[in-house]
Image 1 (cartoon, rainbow, N blue to C red):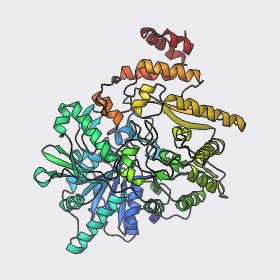
Image 2 (cartoon, rainbow, N blue to C red):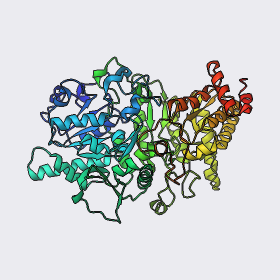
Image 3 (cartoon, rainbow, N blue to C red):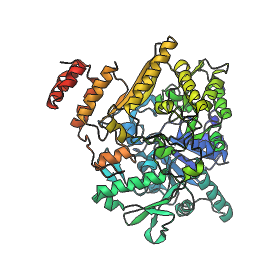
Image 4 (tube, helix red, strand yellow):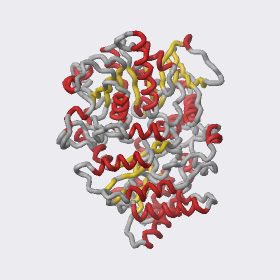
Length: 619
């Protein structure tokens, strides 16, 4: 932190604000994460973005909600609004495993400490601020608010919960990536203050502004809402969802379809006699807009208050570069496309290279980029060839059950980017740590130049950008489960592994391919997991990267878990619900451990699958 002053960070205390010459703040952001001034941390992004708008912004990281609430009072009332985010993860996913046990650490807290944020942090923070400053505007955002904006299933309480707007008592909700809606909101608020001569925006005024702002939500009285069939979709009321799992499944299908349209409709749901209104999103950000977000004057460092303390998530990403947003994979268990969108927005090469230059000047940088990727590493610059076709489409995935014929899957822009990065004097090696979609690498378009470039990219990736272990995510081996996951058939993993092994042999490399797998996903049975164990044993894998399915709000897999129904066709699905059922599936990841063998053999005999006992070699 040489040559850094405390005023290089956004203020976190009144003293730090006064050091900047500020006696009043425009926006105060409360975050469940530690304050790391880096473009991978949402509170820093929104804070820096509003600073660039000329606003006076402070961040209160991980406020104490259990004492006299001094952290919520210390900066007073802002002129525009209080902003709230639980952090980069849903606070419950952050705290608990699928087995509902504490995670080993909180990756976004100093020294991984667990006690720095409350459960359901967005709701807790918002309720406190509304009790202290009832007439001030409270705006909630981040992934917790985004994915809980309608009636949603909560795994930790095992029930349907109301929209977070209702439970938190917040005035406005921002969903998805927040740059465009928060900029629009604040500009409108500033215009109102200038024209009215008021000192502060009121909660009522914030709601009125939100009504005219895309990608926001608010609660309104029934009499205030006029339904327009051409521009609105009305969801089943919260009460009806409590009574009917079919209604909840139908709601999800409607929400997901609208979330994947270029031109979405406004969504409305009745709850407690009022209406939760979610406006359609902004158009996908442009490259220029995304560059602006990444080019803001971040220090790229944790706030000095954490000196001497480790923030695990920061350690993982401090030497990595995000090159795009969005994912068109549409995996059933993933929140990325639901939060970031399925349409890819790319950073320019110039912006990426500027960030790499900044990283190269960090004191602890040794010349190795830990990741040059995104939600899916190899979707950079990919989009529909004819945008007019995309405008009519509501497919949740552009590559499952098959790759859309309108999708441009050209890997040449990525190849060009890798070569430019690796030619930089400060870079010894750039690794690709993000997940790679091998179905895109196997796809044949019929365009000779495009297909040749894909083969070249695959070799470039394996030879020059793997740190000894390439991580990919087949997720399962049984095709009936993979279909529910919206993942490609397992034969494609076989095909990719053959290519991986051939390229390694050609270049005399001794690298490993590390597959990710999930147990207890809706549709997966104990027998399916036994078949997974036998198949991965045949491939000589001792599995490491595994997880038990965790239902998270507003994903297809979670709706299947809660309802026992596939919302897409109404068919009933087997779901492993109890911890006993989930543990029975998880055991098969570790068939090679002596302590698991007795139970596994017993289970397979009960299934009359002695053939699998033989294949696993554990008789």
